[in-house]
Image (cartoon, rainbow, N blue to C red):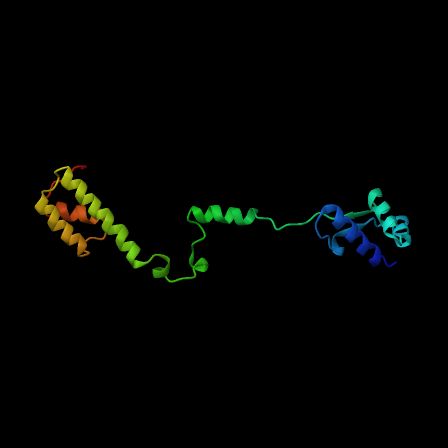
Length: 159
């Protein structure tokens, strides 16, 4: 039983009703034998319209792609997950440029030095000395700089 023509007509009619294009593959026809006979005998558009109104011919809903998995992955990435070796594309320098790493460390060190000078933990001359050392890249981090200051005999608060 060939009903391709009826499906084509139904797609056209339903498409007009929905206000957007409906493909032939979205058309559903009741698979019961008497309904199929009725559809096969429907030759004119009016016959097909009647079958649509009766519910023998329908349009399947549009199936979209679910975004739930993508959203879940995005929340995990925001927490720092999924960053293992298999997920990496660029080099370590491309992912965390040397310049950005340097700026992050030197800004933290300079901020700490300024706070220490303003709180009178270090003298301006000591500030200048440690500022120059920090600029030269002597310290890995703020804690490294503080430990060097303690080795040099500067008493720092906190301990």
